[in-house]
Length: 99
Image (cartoon, rainbow, N blue to C red; front, side, top):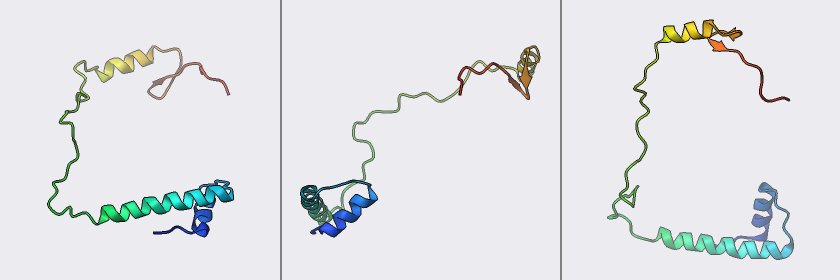
């Protein structure tokens, strides 16, 4: 499938690329080759191919997000209550980043 220079100019405009004439010719050929290859891939018979989402057989190494050290909400309220400055249920601190 041949890509025209007009199509290349349109794509370049969308991508905000400034292309010279040589680059337009090169990209036209390269994109045409890619689309031709995609047409070849679309011709492949994949009816009997089993879907595969994981090829290595590895399992997730991440644990479930569980915290065995539960903190009593009432203790947290008492701690926040002793803070020199607070706002709602949060301890208020001085900003560490300046504008």
